[in-house]
Amino acid sequence: MEYKEPKKRVTKNDKKNKHQVYSQKHVRNLLKQMEATKDKRNDGSVSTPKCSLLPNGRV
Image (spheres, rainbow, N blue to C red):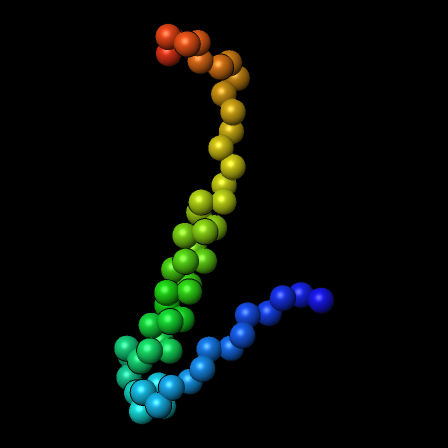
């Protein structure tokens, strides 16, 4: 069974500011999206060079 994150609670402020751009829920969703895109960028594996560096830093 897959792990599912618990749903974020909707606060009174979220209900009041439902139609505003910067409600708490909107900000939480944006942060989540930003973290996801950041993780995707950092997931790329680093390719190893064909020849390794010598102790003096030369190839």
